[in-house]
Image (cartoon, rainbow over all chains, first blue to last red; front, side, top):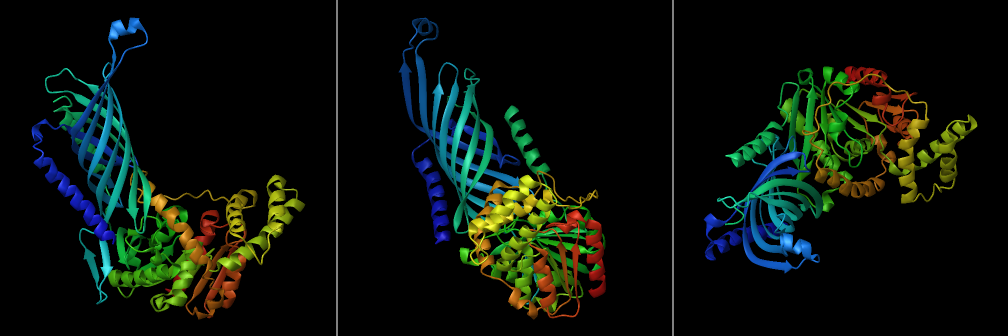
Length: 209
Length: 343
């Protein structure tokens, strides 16, 4: 039952990749996300990915004080909804190397004047843990046998608030967003799920293209 | 270029936190047993051909915590210490059902590991099985429920909780004795008066989970109010740093707390005092006189009941639940004498 569930998750991930192709999204216009990924903060790794903004809303609000309205103009907030595709890994020495592939949905609100970004993401990932120690079994003939590429397969659900700032927005190459994402996770473990925590510190490149 | 630098920086950090390499005196690996991947650390003099398989306490503990301190350095000089993380504990992993989280399964794992150690390091190795605290229960269960006695030269129980039911009753008795002694001697009255009041009200025929929780947590805090020895000897073999500690993951910690109640409940259902007569290999019982977590009465009872003439008991007068930390010199001396005698 558990393996069927995991296979379904994998199929969803793969089908989402195909769907991206069918919608004629110009791959060259998609931004790149790259971040330091710290499992439990201290076990370092790397996460890369991309996002496709499928819905954008602009909200304009006149400031209460006329002086400020004249000086800075109306408050402008942009809310982006994006579909994300992520790939990453981290290393927990003497335990395992974790690799993950996942999809997610992100809501980001950007305040135009200061370019501050606040939002959150929901992700679902397939997590493969490769033990970074040898794994042995005792076979039927009472001989020691080493198992290659041993590890476990898990599903990882993520809720991640995002705090960021758009910088270099006037550059020709499209700008950069720096962000911090404390990642609150739920990882399958035997017959149950366990909470976990990771921290992402990174940037999104080409945010305006 | 900047971003490439960031990526390279992140990769460098990742790769610099490497797994400890295997040497002639150190090895760390997983051993797969019935769906569980048991984390095992072998540290010490493997050339001696004498191996001590040490099981940690808990439930919810781990072997890495025992590979630290002066006593482990000394034992590792002469023997190979095998620190095993029981399933669901420490850095052990794997994929198995809730039904496989039992003392019976844990003792099967221990037996399987004992056979594995002989297959890996040679059938001529002398293997001893040792268990501290809750690990004492698993070792005892393995001895009476599997054929592991055929693989062993001896059993060493260190403040081992081989009978949770008896343990609770003896803890209440010892609490009453020590509380009265300290109150009479006018020592730590703020601590002992409420303890005496609470423990006196407990019914030994109906000890509740709340009582058990109180007894266990108070037993540890009582150690600072007892005349325990504090060793100035420090160890040099603390084997892992902050970033490389195999147990340090939040998920690992939570996994341990998640299995703890399941294994505790099963431990409660497996009192083994009545089966100690089935143990026929040389046995050594090492206990702290002031151990309120697992009182020395359990050690005395086990010493009297095991069915072997080759048995000894040592009660350490200045120790609590962990004599290897309170009186490491005396602890190592008697343990080495026992091993040398029966290896």
